[in-house]
Image (cartoon, rainbow, N blue to C red; front, side, top):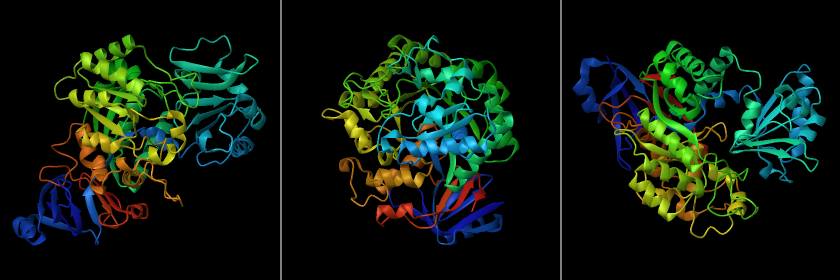
Length: 530
């Protein structure tokens, strides 16, 4: 039997300003959309339920194209360190957690950003020792490309000055030649791979909390990269199977498969957890560089505020080529984390040398700094750029000090990408940034920090229209996952996934979208929040 969704403004996202009065659904799919009276006459006795939108505004379901879903759930289980004004606040939080936990218990925190502090210096081992001398401490920076630990954590993991640092990683040392507790990029694995593992119950709890929070934010699905961080690809997939399929937590999940998890996925994971309407497998994920915050994003020129470095190449050119070739042999596209233009250049060369299998789509994740010739290569491949608009709200203005003279560079150039005909999808990179798609849309449209009294616009020419910004999370995310013919629009045959907002964001000052609220989230014709 069919459902009629009506009494609201319904944007189809097929073209700007196109609306219908009602949507008919059945069996998790859209039957038709159009005039309410005509649809009721057409479907008549098939209709067994009318869903009153209460004057809200319905869109195709918002999909986050770049998230670490379990990691987002972990934010409800770990010490959160974002929004601090100085390092003293961080140390106070660590000391407070040490008072609450039995000695010997690991203190794990995440989200700190020294660029927001009065003194932009990384917290070191010695400082953490003073705050928590009897607890191993591990704190990950907001970008997740840098972590810091105390002495007890080094002892627990067996890491010392003689430990070999993997290629593409940095283990910081003080003037005395001893480890200072700061590990960057691949060197983080020295700590992360030796810490106590998480339980299956922990994974399922974090995943459940993540999905429920996504529903509250109006998110109906995501593209996520979780399969190499929690003790194995297979056990992580089993957690998704348990929560989403067996637990009926409906959420469209498109996996990116980290290259370190690829063999296990090929041999066991994909067979144990087969694809379904809610779980599917996408591209092989790899990292080509790090972050701008840690000066490990690979640029084509030295950093303006530290000319001694131009960043870190996680892989050699030969290794990048080998990894992409391995993806192709498995019939997969490649999705490469590349923030700097130096990293993008290396990735695009490897993609061009190893053409993408028919029916698949490569993606450049982040693409925050590019050049004209790289845009031409992206379009020619073709490849999708997976952008995170909310980075504008957190990275400016300090990122300008990193880059310096931007002549010849496109910096967070979302409008330039679209004008160049390069498909873009919108994500949050949660838990690194807020998962809220409304914040992402606001950032894409205004290029301003929320609450900035000066209303400083960072790159006015790169602002998107409201329609373009919302498209990132609807048609854009659908295209990136190869679902442009059955998701992302209000159209017959498409998935009955909807995001319903309290108010229509079109025709109003863009900052009002931050005050808007999610009235209802619908996945597979089921109201999961509202």
